[in-house]
Image (tube, rainbow, N blue to C red):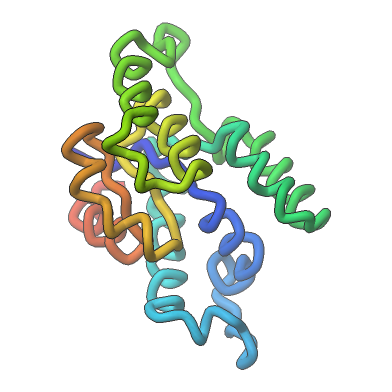
Length: 182
């Protein structure tokens, strides 16, 4: 199955905002860029670059939610907030769009998302639970994050919700076999 419905974690939004010239335009990274000190940071930016090229050619659905925007607001950076608001407004090009007949959340996704309130997911940070809940409600295949901690719980989350929690490098590994189709 093509991993085509992708929930963008706030950390991915931040990377797209901060390193957009590198990701979208192929510019060089500033030698002082913080991402250079993050393990697999540049590899994840390169994977985002490749994914975005494929997203632009295919029938991919990218999702954000009110919880995403609340996290952006909590960061207190007006430039990032303005940019994220613009991303929320790009319904045709960027964000999750559904055929008119598709109504989400469904009874099934609502039931699944409610499981995140259970004790077996108490190890997740409350903000991560909110974002994951939104991704489940929206029927996403992938929860894309730049974070390193959340993907460590990916198997448990996939087992219960069928959603892959991955960093861009891992997402690109899922997407690359299909990339030539788009």
